[in-house]
Length: 144
Image (cartoon, rainbow, N blue to C red; front, side, top):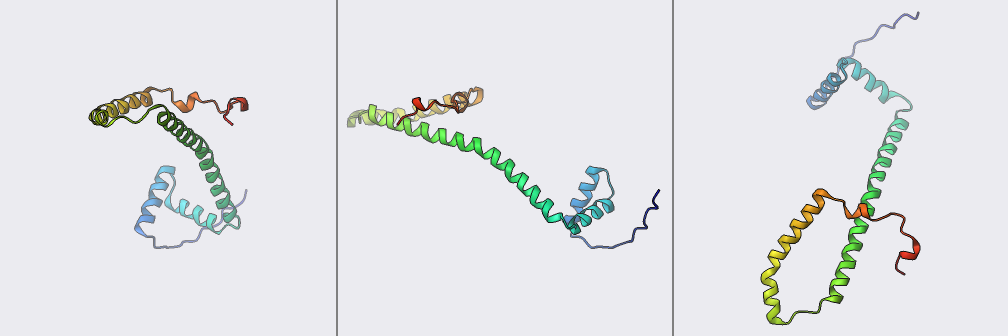
């Protein structure tokens, strides 16, 4: 059995916020503040601390990238869906004559409120459009 080495005392002054964070972390881990501080200092002074930090940063960036990929896909679907709808609407709906425009403006608020309510119901219960769209669309089906 090896004899444990005698530890030396060190007094340090910490910013109140750092001290509070240290105490909270030690309490969560059910460890002493001294043990947590010693481990943090040892990690900071370790020659491979920079490599560990870089690895942790790389892991975090990879996680963020994995989360961003589906979001980019969903945004692309949304933009394309809106563009297709606008093009379809503009090509199939001729402009209204002036007297009809006034009546249409009067109903616009009610129609918009009905649209928002329907969208809210769809989002609340799904399925979502992005879930209905396959990621493997055959090339023959894509427009040229």
